[in-house]
Amino acid sequence: MGAREVVVVSAVRTPFSRFGGVLRDVPSIILGAMAIREAVDRVGLANDEIDEVYYGNCQVGENSLENDVPDRQAVLEAGLSPKTLSFTIDRACCASLTAVRLAFHSIRWGERDICIAAGAENMSRLPLLLPGIRFSGHRIGNLEIYDNLFELGYKGWNPISRRTAEITLDFKGWNAVARDAGEVALEYGVSRQEQDEWAVRSQQYYAQAFAAGKFKVGEELMSVKLTPKKGTPIVFEKDEFPRPDTTLEKLAKLATIYGSPTVTAGNAPGLDAGASAVVLMSKEKAAEKGLTPLGTILSVEGVADEARLLASVPAPAIRKALSAAKLHLKDVHLFEVNEAFAVMPLVSSKILADGDVKRIKGIRDKMNVNGGAVAIGHPVGASGARILMTLMYELRRRGGGIGACGICGGLAQGEAAVIKVI
Image 1 (cartoon, rainbow, N blue to C red):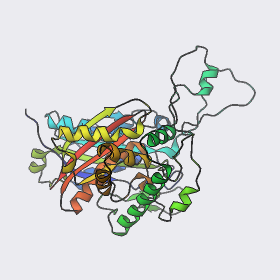
Image 2: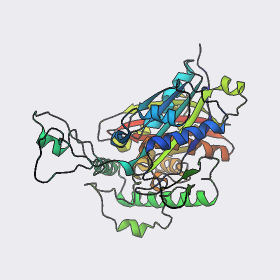
Image 3: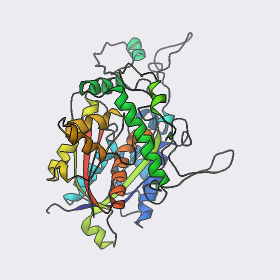
Image 4: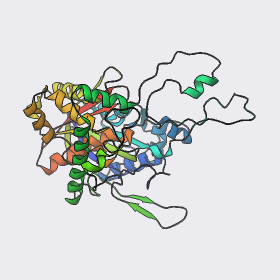
């Protein structure tokens, strides 16, 4: 069988909740199931029509509260057939766009007809840990708790485990991601002030887009209904993280975090909660079912680089995806680069433009035109699919075109997709 066209027929996400916010007690598995259910219902698919679900999720500790196989649990919670295949992908923040890549290739080469690429995260529920306590024989004295969210670094083994281990193991350790991002930003000549300016831009652009009705239930967003044990039911229908009152003066007063020379809590997203889901199928299957495609996936590609180069990997990923689609930068009408920090779109645009000042401005004018994760939030397992659908829906509002999106993931992984909307 030759290569088939792969189309998106449904794409939706929950509103994103801030750290400790509305969704703080909702398991990511449930959020993922909600998004999957909504994506399926929007196009009237039966529960047994999905061939496979690719499910992005990164914070393993949160899922450990429900044991394991979050993909399988989300599929069953969503009410899909128990015969539906699925598996979990942990490629850090790239995870749900990697899910799109796997679905794309499965459909393109005839292995599957209908797939879902999804992702979910709830960083508010990530538990505090007591490493090494199970066999320590501890009877009296203080216990030390380990917080996996602190610094957001990759330590190999955390310091507590190193002290309690009977065997010395040579685990590598890596910097906090904010430090690596800030240092790489400076290497590319991107200052702290530029990052603060981009963060203000993100907040302002999101506020404008929201006021214009772009982030509304029924398009990118779905409604999430919660019933607390006490109190009245909650209907959650808009992103909770945006801060429209953000100013450059306020951001300039913030201290940098985790040893970073440039990254602050103001030019970074939060530790958020939310889920995304995209239904993909072959163009032939969509026609057979009478469904109008929202967009056509032209390519999805992944890259990786030296561990500290987190801030620079979206650009080569986008270049690789454009090459696979036989397109060039000049063919792209809109870009979406995930704002894991404000650093990422700034560095990415400089790399894509080969440092040419005029070309940098041209790319940035077409990038994250409705704001990005600094305003929207970044529930890491859901963000890859989120940037794809945000890009796709904006292209549709503009009457079509070519879009390219890119995202980085921990220890310098990258993922990018190119989509065409008619």
